[in-house]
Image (tube, rainbow, N blue to C red):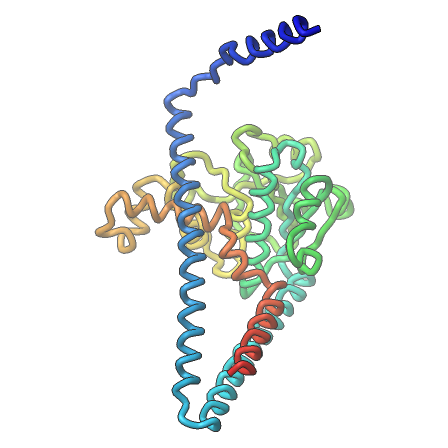
Length: 358
């Protein structure tokens, strides 16, 4: 038995010592992309850490200033006046925020009746991995936040919302309170009586969109990393027999690569157009500088970029990409409507506790 046991151990040791197959060698282009992605992730993590640390310092500084201010009060009456003054300011701030929230909710409810219908097609979840699904969820969060801040918001729809995509959306804080249409059925079923009004927005379409028709329902494909699935949305629309159109990007600027944009970029362009009625303004305010050709950047951004070296311009592009595509968690939290009241209540409780202790 001992000899057999020893033989098995030696066999396992030999397996461990066997050379492992080498990972496939990356091409130079792939190595550059990987290095660029690693630098981007490192910069993003560093920026988040700095924001967190700065927020902590600001909180400590404000608490110290308040304690010093209370300690400097000559009499108990002056101290109470300071406390009441701060309570009044906080109440005014909370009332203003509540008023703004009320107006925002009113605009979104009105949009459900009169707003431009914009659909995000979520039937492609089976073509994306977990990371890509998470990225799409972040883009949808940004779409909702931007729409809520618009003076003329659209009536947003999420169709074909099932499976893993639905699970990730349901885990978002306050998602159940979003003023947005959540439809499990595909858009072709949800709008089966309005098929002639459906227009799928795809860069592969031959027809160019000149204006937004209030009677039309515009569909945006909820798909991340479309380079793997070129022509997919166009084929889907053709198979379903619905209209297709592309944004008039080429009329106003030259793209450095393809005209494929992220979901949140397309939604924001449509919202800008609804607000301004000007495609050119909408494109230049939304499309990241890195996606435009150098000539367009020089003409439209001369005042902004004059005097900046290439390094600063690249940093600007990275920050714009983080805001528009990755939807930085800090930014989302700032604009997360459903969590504002909870945050204010916690702040108010902390303030009252400090007043009592003082």
